Length: 131
Image 1: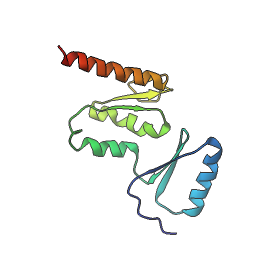
Image 2: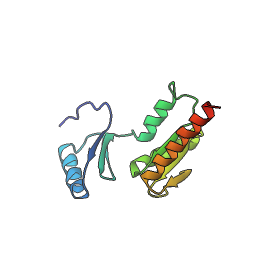
Image 3: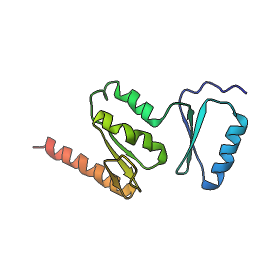
């Protein structure tokens, strides 16, 4: 079977019980397809071989309005680790959520802490603008 042209990645929300079944089906239907299937937290990421979230971030960082800026990346899944690894290349900051991943600047214990941090950033910016 020929693989249709894939323009991007596909993420499928799955339960732990369906992950193994889904992986088996994908590789049975597309045994020689140039794809990678990566399990994550309740997600199965299906993407062209050689592409990752990091390759997407690298591409974004080469274009305005991102070019020359300092990226901040927050992730909570194994599928985010490729981006954690490249953040130093851009002078960026990487934060993991739930667990301390390798190569991150720091981490948040839970998503609520991320929301609180973002709210403080917005408040600080608003206060600075009001001076």
